[in-house]
Length: 313
Image 1 (cartoon, rainbow, N blue to C red):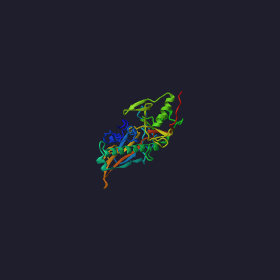
Image 2 (image 1 turned 45 degrees about the vertical axis):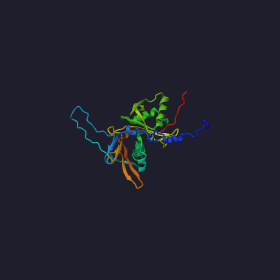
Image 3 (image 1 turned 90 degrees about the vertical axis):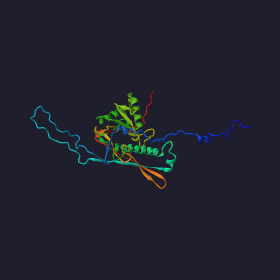
Image 4 (image 1 turned 30 degrees about the vertical axis):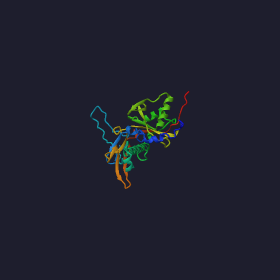
């Protein structure tokens, strides 16, 4: 009679697994972020792929006016001149091609459609690149185009309430939001706690955001820490304060409107065909840029440290 503890002839879990029904998730992509910048930054559609940024030639100049109780004085005559060679922004194309074997999509699209999932993940990838370029592009990136007078450095090397107030003094006309790496936001929170003035949180888009002076502090890992989206224990980064919107002469994002196969603002998906090996090709493209309409629409706190901690007794 076999030993009751001998299960070598019993149905194993490995074998039973072949008949088991499995609950699955859609593909989870760890590099995807909330991309709050796209929600807080006003996006302007353009039709020709080119945006001309017209500016007043002398922004310090105001027209002379007459303030008089009598009608005997001549009214001053003048006009506001424009820059003769305004900057033009040509939209950047961010593109990729997704390849999917027709055999795979035909046989393995239950419960998740393989084509839809691959295209979804591809679109997420190029949207991540779009946000990165809006901040870091050598051509139109926000960090590269901030005026010298709008750049400040932290007095202590770490982001303090004083530094954030200094940013507000640079962007005092209806500031919209701070933009910072999560590590920088955490460092700012520690400095505020040290001073006994913890930032107030508000709910926007159903998500809590820290604020300073009522201005939301928006996280983005595209403001790199020592060149890394995922930093080590400490490092240096930048913090932005932005006024958003064309009507406010602020910062705007640009995208091409009405592209063929448009799935969202400026993003298109187009089927390119199937080759003789049965592989389908899908072209994913997004056209983007950004413009700072006036110098005082943005300011930056540069080279702020994220690795300062305190021991509380």
